Each structure stands twice: as structure tokens, then as C-alpha cells.
Length: 401
Image (cartoon, rainbow, N blue to C red):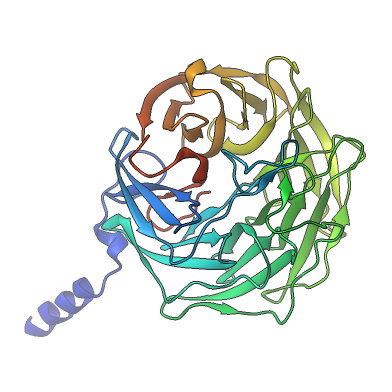
């Protein structure tokens, strides 16, 4: 009997923390969730963390320095520093397992944080930021199965670098040189949004890595696919350029080989793309078309598996566009207050969608009722709105970005 009680004590003491987690709302299974975005400030970048309550509403912003500095791109049309969307990209912050990764465009580094399930709004920097191997890193991705993170550099030294992820030592470089994303040819900082780097992401199955760079009017963009062999990302990519539209931006994986990608071209919310697993070539299967007057500059993408719907966020329109992931067609709009001006970086958790508005607000939308349930104004709380980029969620060790 004494030995039985002793072994019961040992089993309890070393049980996984997940054994003690409550099951609450949304997709996660922890008592605490958090929402994150990057304050891309040239004087010192920081991660902004927001608490989520049981209803999915956000509060209590906390800033944690990344150890690096931010940098704004240049608006090509005016020559001025870019305002909102200062990196011309999506997935500037990603979360996977109990880690958070982000980019420091001004110092050309990448930062890794450890997240405590019991205190997710105070992520802890692991080691020091590491060299991104290029200039102006704009997007990052993490594959839990590979314990690998890869970063997309969009400056004069453009390309992709990958790192082994170690819980104690942080990011360990895996490459001696960048993977090419030619024909990108730009400066530090780059001028855009056209002809700049957009996003990088592993496929859900970790079979390949995908990144895209934008085109411009009459100049197709390029989608790069690197296969993963024996746990390592290949150095040579298969490149696909669609004949049109031209200005490809953010994307979200719908399954292992299917993607919804936004395009800023007039009249397009996004395209549904298939990736051939044997050739790594990308092909359009359908597109969600919109009125060019109602929906301008489709840039950011996310989707809800529960509702079989992909969502596109526009830079200057007061509505989200919906696309049915079963039919591949436009499925209507979700309207929001025109004072919010536009929907930038976003993330979906179950049937709630979170986005950074063009105004200094974080917005929560109930996708079932298609109603805005919260607008949290952060003006003056976490620095200048022009530096806010990225959005990711911690839900207890899964990933969401």
C-alpha cells in the first residue's frame, strides 16, 4: 500500500501540465490565452501581448522588448516612410508549441520567446536575437514537427534562412547562405508595397515551405516552394508566376496542399491555389472576385475551418470579404464601423476573428453572427499605430498565426 501511494505521488508530480488544464471556450485547452502583435519601432521593437477572457475579448496590453529594432519601408508612390503595414507583409509574429517568434527589420535579426501557459502575456526572450542572414526580415514561420523556424528577408540581401529551434539555446543557424528569392531586387529599406516580399509559411504537414514576393501592374509576382527532405528544407525552390493578377500578398493554408492567397489588384479578394506535391508547382483553381469600388487592396488572409470560410482584409475598406472554401467563390462581406478604416493583420480562433484596424484599434468579430463584439482602442497605450504589424494567438501549445 505504501509503495502504491508512493508511485501515485510520483506519477502525479511528473504529469504533463496539460493534465491539469481546464477546458474552456475556443480551440485551446488552457485557462489562459493571449493575442500578440509586433510594435515595429525603430527605437526598439516590442511584442504587445493582450489577455483574452472567457468570451474572447481582449484587454491589459503588455509590452515586452524583442531585443532588436524595427524599420519602416518606403511608400514607392510618394517616397515617404510607410504608415500602417510598415513591413509590407503578413506573419511577422508566429506562435507554435510554447514559443513565439518575430522579426526585427531594423537590426536584421530574429527573436525567439518562451511562453508560460500560466502567464502567456509575459513571454520570455530565449537567448539573444540572432542574425537573419539578410536585410529587412519581414515574415517568419515555425514547424513544430521539424523544430525549425525560417525567416523571409526582404531587403537588399533578400532570401530565406532557417534555424534549429532549441528550448534552452534559442535559434541555431542551419544555413551557410540564403535561399534565393530572385528576381526580388530592392534596397534597404525597400520601397513598396509592389515588388516586395510578402510572407513565408510551412505547410501544415511540413512537407514544404512556401514564400511569395509581389509583382506590380503587368509584372507577375512569384510563389516559391521548397520541398522538405528528411527533416531539412531544400536550398532550391520551385518558382511559379501566375499570369495575373499581379500583386500577391498574404496567404493561409486550408489544408496541406491548398492555399487561399490575397491579391491587392482591383476586383480580387483572393485566389484559391493548389500545390502539386510531386512537382511543387502552384496552380489557380478558383478565385473570389469583388466589386473594385467596395473592396480595395486585399492584403491579409485567415480562415475558419468551422465555417468553411476564408477571410480577406483590405487596407482601406470598412469590411471583410468572405470566400467559401468549398466552392472557391466570393461569399459576401462582413461590415464594420467605417471609422476603423481597414482590416490589417488578422487571426482566427474558432469562430472569432481578431484584426488590427487602420485606426489604433484591435477588433474582435463574431464570425457566426458577423457582428463586431469589441473594439479596443490602444492609441497612446503601446506606441504609434504606424508600427503595429502581425497578429498571432497562443492557445496552449498549438499554433495560430
